[in-house]
Length: 224
Image (cartoon, helix red, strand yellow):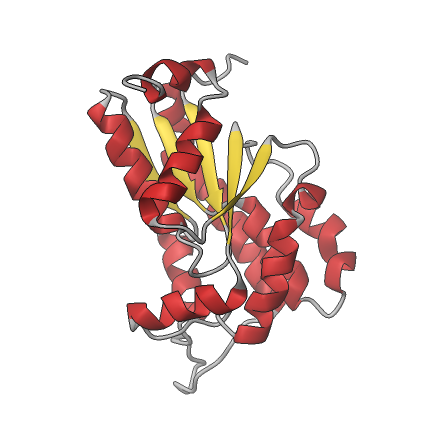
């Protein structure tokens, strides 16, 4: 099977770490350098992803119209299903067309968030890896590391309704887990970067990491 011609970059981190902002900043930079870029996210904008977002916002109801929630296993299966659809519908076609795909979260989020909310803790990782085993590996993953308190302050500034996984104690636990992200995806190429600087400082750190890849180095170092 011919390897896709594009480049698959994933940005990861706790809620408030700046993944969405940095995805757009990097995309703008690459477009200025005449690169084809697709910015996407998980949960995706597809049918399963939209259903997941309803669950995260607490909008699901039962037959009588009463609010209902999903357990961690149901969420895990939904995330893996959304990922399969996301790959076939958006990511793989874009890579085949030679685009840089920047994805805000991917299966590392599933491994961390679902194991953190599982009664089995990290004992659930073998099953979580199994249901995501067919997911195409990223070419590179960048984890944006930020303290839980700083991330919470950023979320409050957004003035948006909090979602299911945005509990302070859970985010603090996830912050520690993201610092050890390589343990969860030991075969992946991955870098953990501080995200506590300014937007431009973090963007510079991301571009410096991408300089390691020949397809980016020539454009990212121009003018330096």
